[in-house]
Length: 362
Ligand code: SAH
Image 1 (cartoon, protein in one colour):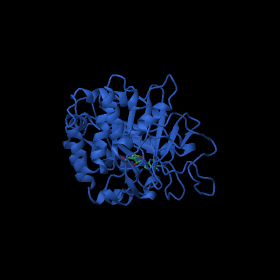
Image 2 (cartoon, rainbow, N blue to C red):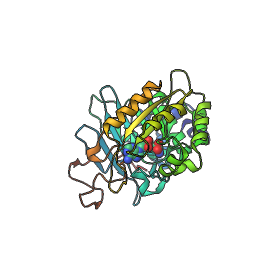
Image 3 (spheres, protein in one colour):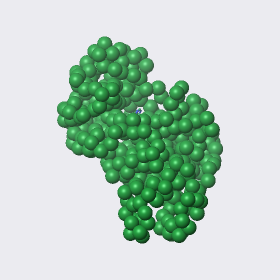
Image 4 (cartoon, helix red, strand yellow):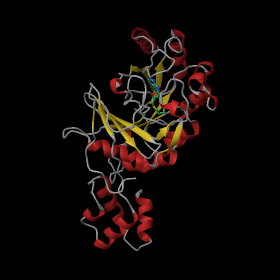
């Protein structure tokens, strides 16, 4: 719940509105293990809360550790739906990559999550729950500095839950992570992108991966609905604040979208947009049907963009050995060599999760 909704609930019981932020900071900031533990609330209110609500909580079924210290958390939400979140430590940052849907309906040809299809949307509680659960996995000297909606699913296809989760993550009474440290990545759902920029202050990342409709449509079917020209015109018109940029993600596929002509076209498309390009080396998965561009080709592509005045970086692939890298999230980190996926309990190279299970976590 956000404070507005909670205030309405409180008002119906003639309880003063200031209790709402008290309650929520117990939940998100002080991590009360139960309503009974919310010491500065009257006993009757604690009982009433316990009768009506559950504390948000997700418990990872498996936590897999990669050689590079990337950690992947698997959550079994119900019988069918499971999701993953990935903790990615870097020199000065600790980024958490979270999921917005179980599976994904966007059908991008190069992405493992797409092969699952869309199982269901996550609730705001399940989105925020990934952050709370990841915080419990941290070592004492660690703190999550950034959250990216780059896990499973298309966040803008689950708009209401996304918006509620962003409010909880960024609020002072909530998780307290500044919206500037939150990035939402999208395949390019144009109307929802415009709404998001109006409704929030988060960063926007757009998965482009093609420079013409003929090239992008077979890779990303969403291009039928929002072709390259429509998408770019809308990006050009977005009111992006000073000192901020839209990130364009571009998965590098050998012989598909990695030619010098592609780099030239990409630079032309981005002309006049406050942007930066993030080139993503393709991460393979079984039966992907694509090969990643060789490192030298990616470097040449980057140089081409830089020479054209486009800010371009190459994403360093993280957590590949536990299938935690971009486009590999398909609940397959526990797959043996023949490709069967055992029930997600324990797997070699993984250790069981620890941390208390919050009451009635849903
Ligand atoms: N649905 C949103 C959020 C997921 S972000 C979106 O697509 O933007 C995941 C990123 O990983 C996207 O940029 C996607 O294009 C990229 N990706 C998908 N499959 C990949 C793969 N096999 N290798 C590398 N990157 C991949």
